[in-house]
Length: 320
Image (cartoon, rainbow, N blue to C red; front, top):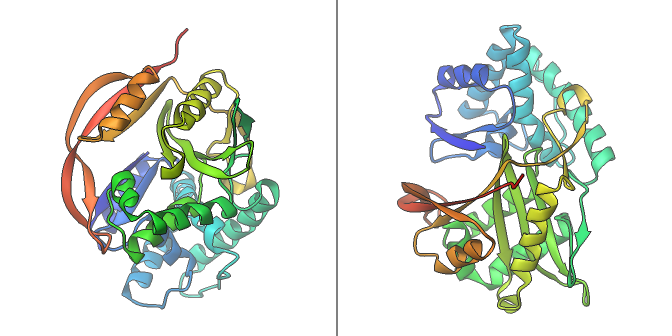
């Protein structure tokens, strides 16, 4: 999965990309204004007023559907479906006669989202869980999302270390949205201490084709106890052994298909200077692949890009 920043009025460019990409691996954002989910929220009219941005978004969706191209329709569907999972119960979709094709599509999307929630719970795209000697890994549902946000409020410095964002209400909202909506490419786990059932952190992977990008967070009070290694090492083994499942780009028109999530390679991307994370992935057996110059964006308190940092690239291949 990758992100491309585009100007808010460049809908022709976005249409071209929709034609090229026929799955939800490709996400877009408006330049310095909205992330992907807010972009989709305009399509779903999730609490937004009918301002210029709404009409541009809706007109674009209508234009895409006028092409009568099934691949374009699927691409558009897969862009807005995760947003429907997040917003449909909070702000019901309302039909807009100015955009009949888009409204008809969104009616389908919201019905499909209801089926998805009924089948998979609170918008989660996986039901994997497993145990290690001391830990239990379970889907990161709403209860654990709230615990995570409470942790960042109490440990403000970690927000900057982990997500390159200083503590602010806007950045907390961003993290909350990020964890509130999974899609078929994300598999996140809450890490629980089996002896106390306390949440000690999170881990997960983001799939881009046959590549899985690893992420991990251990809360400060539980660090230096080996929890991160125990949880992430177990997750890696489960992935390579084919014991983890996900729903892959099969949500279109309510076709839910559960498939094994078996990556060919697992990658870790680390901001230069984060020596503990470097040492951690090396201990897991990851190999250093090189440096991607100025590839990590750091944000200010308003959630806007502020600077660029080097990204250190590590990978772990599946052994035959």
